Length: 509
Image (cartoon, rainbow, N blue to C red; front, side, top):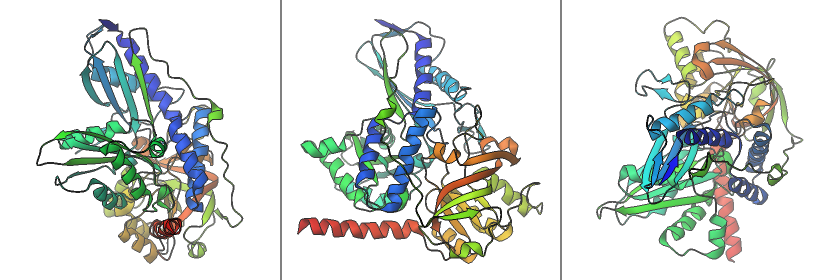
């Protein structure tokens, strides 16, 4: 019988969550590097360069890879021969205590994103608890823990279906993936759970994402099982879609496909698909009674020496003087460097603005959006001499239902976020001759370095969802929707899907 100290377990959870907030798993870094080297789409290559640069910067600075520091998911496998030195806390409570300490760490505070009363008030719990904990009793005298921090942008793209037994799983994945948009920040991984029951398939899919990236090794040795054959089939077919990094079109959409399965009812075929984003974060450790776990920090030389240079045709824009007429000649796919003042705002701020306008109150004091740009972001708190913590973009589609109102009633001329906009929003952008700019999801620490000043101007009680004013210098973005309604998230994947078909046709000749 092995005795595990409660404090060792809590300390290990805390340390693991801090560790994964700034260290990418190296297998993911190497996979993105490999994809970067072979990428032929310049937009996708630039996006992956920023992801890799951000990854190294986060490792050096020990600050979050992404401003969305995630909802904690923890798989705890407890050996049947394990006992605890104390019994005053459940495993759930111990995981929550470790989570609380990790997210409130003064040296590297992590953004609290969990809200209670999800169908009602949605009030932030302030410490990112509770975690989602899955507990299994297994043979042995040790405790194995797999812990991850999953961002909302990728978690929201999870899909589940009850297929007929004769249905083709790969066909469903290929049909479904384009409907997920780019809010899950590709290039990432797909976790697929098959069998069991509906809820078990989802747990299997999430657990599969804890496995290491090894698709290239599998391709080299060849598939031996049904699951391995399906992994390779889905991997090729998904990348052949041409969605590419950040959905801008390119050769690599996923760097791996993971599958876990269980026996299921003869009449059923439950399938769940959960993507992991460019901020893939997970760690594994074992407790054997000898003390807390010690995760080995990777070496900085393990990161590729990737650079990203501003192109000759890059447009530089002064946000303090830009007008609606100025943005009319910006073209989709163009790289823009922003300098000057912008406002921020995401879900809660937009909803409150809408209520105020509907009530005839006007905009909150200190908020003037005339000829201004708004950045969809919820930053991490600053530490030390930082102006702001990691401040990457949030998924823009969540603001779609507010966009027509904002463009029509506030004088707003541009928006900055990540991923695509819906068809009605693209139409609204074209109608109002506005623009939508895309920052790279998964490059939050890199983006924060372009922010030179930051202050809260409204809704301070909303925390990270308050309206800030940022003063930026050379913040890199891409024109994703221009004033004519041209849309990079439609044209890019379509072009690269056709190019991939042409490349494969040439190889087969």
